[in-house]
Length: 388
Ligand code: 0PR
Image (tube, rainbow, N blue to C red):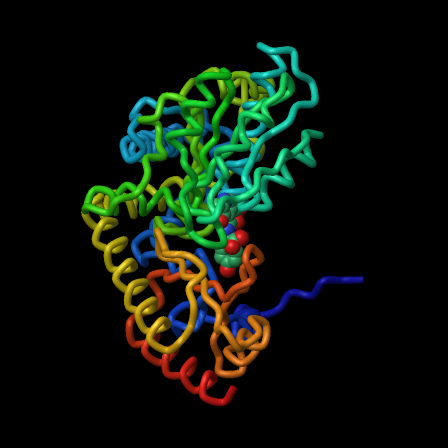
């Protein structure tokens, strides 16, 4: 058997033929994604650093310094410029690192072998992967009437095996923020690790707060917060893959470190070995280019689009599940089954997702969705409504 060489033009044509089957953000019809088209400048920088390997930082000292600068800049955004951490592949890896840190810390200081983590029902499924990998148990907390973590049942669920509490700042399905301030108090009271998953909300909540939105505190300014996940490849406009994990203490990285004796650095705390330097470089590029003001402008624009869609939905008889805190809207029609509605929308070329709790149409208003797309979407919804 031989794998024959093919001419470059033919390869390109073949790949482009495959690519035709992909939906494009620029069509404005992908309504259920937390990702978007990365900024062109970030893409350019990404390509420049494609060969840099953060898994062997002694060889790529410059790129390692870039990663440090990313963590510092995001630390400033999250009220702790002295945070420690890494640029990783996204929210899943960041959450796995956080849980691994909590597990190893509890193993070292509290002698807990197979611990439990307390998290809300709304937590992303990446925590199921984390607990499965580490043989930990999940204690799931119900949501309250506002679909955020029900505070009243947390303390009852804390046991001598609890290794971490998790709160979400921007839930996957509804974009809501858990009461992190109260979780922080509980974490301090019981001396338990608190992880905040701000994979989605991290690049918008601070900017919205700064421009006057009344949103809860969620970051390192709360003394009980031990770590935060935040994804540049969601609201940060960086190319995929780019996620970040930030820790308050260096010890959380140390307890995860394994020896890498033959490499230029002798210890490694990340899960992945060979790591893209390109993610760190492109993230730094877009953060420097936009600056906090640039992100603030985008966050405000997306909230204005959210308000526009919300008002039109209500006008047309659709019912919102909850008042949006961020740029995610969840809704239903009182007389149309949610799955039927999603099917009808797909027939008209709109790709929405369906939330599970509660079952509803979920729209994530990312930057590729312009007001003009929303106007067309509203007209199509109106037509579907008319035919029912
Ligand atoms: N934490 C939260 C709060 C998330 O919403 C997500 C992903 C993660 C962690 C995991 O992040 P990674 O997927 O980067 O590992 N949320 C999106 C979701 O599940 C991911 C996504 C994005 C899915 C774009 C589809 C899509 O088209 O909805």
